[in-house]
Amino acid sequence: MPIPLSLTEPGLEQTLEDSTGSLIRRSILPGGIRLITERDPSVRSASVGFWLPVGSRDETPEHAGSTHVLEHLLFKGTPSRTALEIATAFDEVGGETNAATAKEHTCYYARVRSADLPMAISVLADMVTSPLLDEDAFLTEREVILEELAMAEDDPTDVGFEAVMADVLGPDTALGRPVGGTPETVMAVGLENVRDHYREHYAPERLLVTAVGDVDHVQVRELVLAAVSAGGWSLADGALPTPMRSTTAHRMPPEKRSMRELRRDTEQTHVFIGGPSITAVDDRRQAMTVLMSILGGGMSSRLFQEVRERRGLAYSVYSYHSAFRDAGMAGMYAACRAKSADAVADLLVAEVERMAEHGITDDELRRALGQITGSMALGLEDTQSRMARLATSELLQGQFRSVDEALDAFNAVERPQVQQLAAEMADAVGTRVDVGPERTPTQAIPTTTSEENQR
Image (cartoon, rainbow, N blue to C red; front, side, top):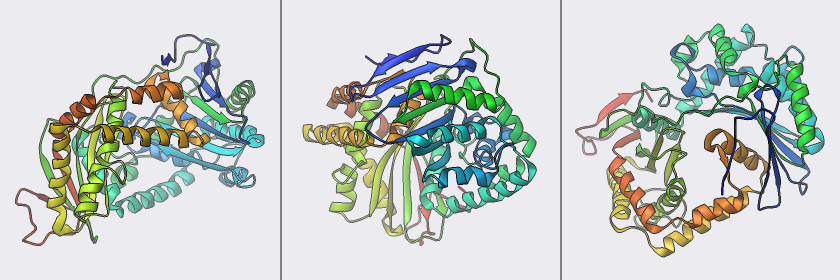
């Protein structure tokens, strides 16, 4: 059975023995800091992540874009390290460091030799606990972020995915807004707004540290506590971690059928179709993974075979599912020449409807389970993926499943479950976004709203 990750006992420590032979230990440290380690003595490296359960959806209107700005600014120096010294610390040992902002979390992470883990923890903790957040760095990084947004604007898949997500989840909701903000919000947010956002969301009780590889739990615990204390955070005994994010249903926009075009000077039209779907904590999420695999998860998937192999109408075609604690979105994507966009869009929807009506075959279920379990096995060879898996268990699921338990959950999926989810998806995928060149008169869709230069 999955093991609940209790948040109610200060000083709690759990030992979770995975079926792979790895020893996983979880502790609640002073200040409410959560630490999860997975020891794997077969490697000589370690991946460590400092996670905060704050993402773009947690921003107030005046703080819009602050989460992403903070991700950049934390690399720009502390009272004890310059930005160059932070970068050099990892480069000179052949390590890697980076960060990621999402809708529900922010992560600062590194991968180094196990001998260099003390350095990685010290630097990451310094960044998280005591960033300078000064004016010069803020103005410089704002320009960098604007370039990053401009780069995304040049990528039609980024543009289309943001647009369909906004339409499905609600463009005026926190969850529907772009993770990185927009040029307008980035220019509007001030340094004091960013500092306020930092003070509100960066605190010991919100911090989760995960480490995987040739690591010792007791050593990592002492390194984290020493580094966080050196950064000036007060670590009160008996403090509890922040409760998990609510699963109360996200306020979705009214159900609608919509179609819009975003004009871009591209050779292909990028077709996105989507609609609301199950959440990340739904008991049917394994069945959804199976559905995505069969529908559009590989070269043997239905969409690939029908749209590309049989008809030659697209080079890239797949299905996707994005899930959060309280909402989800599922859909399909294909890139094709403009003259084929309508035919391809019809084929995408028709394939889901066919699955909803007739279900899937035993062979399709067998292949999907093989693909999923094989991908899991390959992922276990990557300490960074395993480090993220621990964080997902803590921040998103609130429970830990061993690898065998996860495999059992997938192997328990039955054909009727997949068919039912396909029926729900067929009813829900009412949003279509096309990103590409202007249609010729013979290709135009009368009900389409064309939009210039917007997501």
